[in-house]
Image (cartoon, rainbow, N blue to C red; front, side):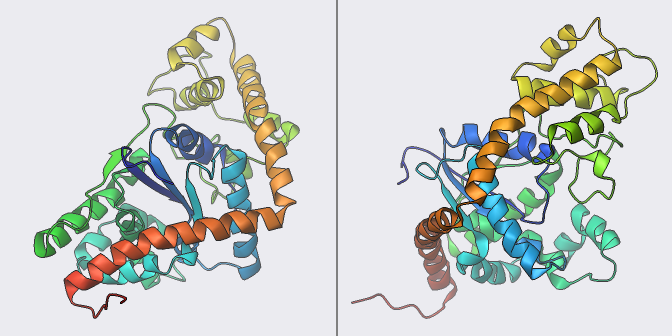
Length: 336
């Protein structure tokens, strides 16, 4: 199904509950555009999710919900592969192999490991530390040329690149060394209540984020309470993180530049800005929410998509894993 003249792209999102506006603008929205230019492989990365203890029922439901949200946002399974990570055992197998090429010092320096350890001090497990290696396996397994990432994910992609170069240096050309794609704008949507922090679904304050399934009244309420500042000037500036965040969201939803958004609001006050941003988000999410509800009511359709994609992903993954296994000396026999 893939075009040999196109580069391969891999990305995954954890099915750990709420999908935020930040996930949409920073990732899902871009995926829809990228699927026309690349051979795209998208995954519901449930193996990553279990580094933090999950309720089994919730994990099952969230995995289907995330699949539905991918599709509702515009991911086309006739152009892409969309699968659940645990459906392809090669991810875990390659991660184990790559563990033997990764150094403890590399993992202990990971910023996200330090942050997640603080939040989960009662369950600092090996998986929490080693999940960047699994992330590397996700990427390298499909010989991905590019990976769309946020500015805060550079460190993890750098590890993937280092492991690819390290393995290739010992066993010869095997893995493609992936390059990052960082969107020029909208890559990082910030919290509505603490605009110095990234918008996060794990934030305890529900007013800090917009969920993709929030209704119109909730969206309006959350934007009304969003943090700005005291001078009432609507400009994009480092000194005005709250206002800048609102302009970024508005420009992404309206598909205009931040400069044009600034011009649009040059004679407005913060109340008018918040109201307009809320309305732009409501309009953007309405068709997505409608399609999402339809898909969730058709579990058989979701299962068929995931089953078909599982086969496609397994074929690609097995090819790479067999190549790696032979190179390191595992016994593999060709079928007669």
